[in-house]
Image 1: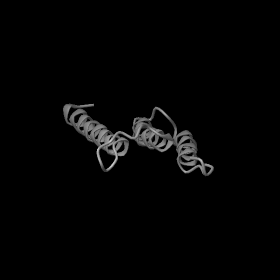
Image 2: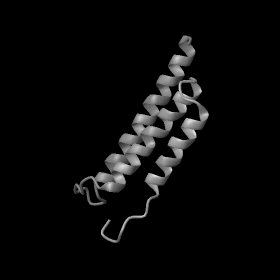
Image 3: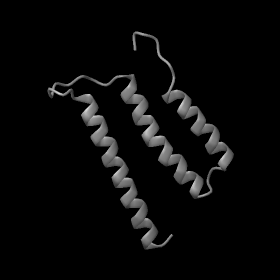
Length: 88
């Protein structure tokens, strides 16, 4: 990898971390500014937003085969959209 590719990956990583931080920060605090706490949906959102780019990078760099990435991505989607009971 040359310097240009490294700088692009660094910029994308910083942007991703910023988006995740802003989303988690806004979801932990309510509209009135009081802290609500971390629930299961916040944990699911965090894991999905972290794992998808990670899998994408591993696939682009040919560390993981495409079939493995597809299976893991399907599992992540199933986890994120799992139906919870009414006490969620």
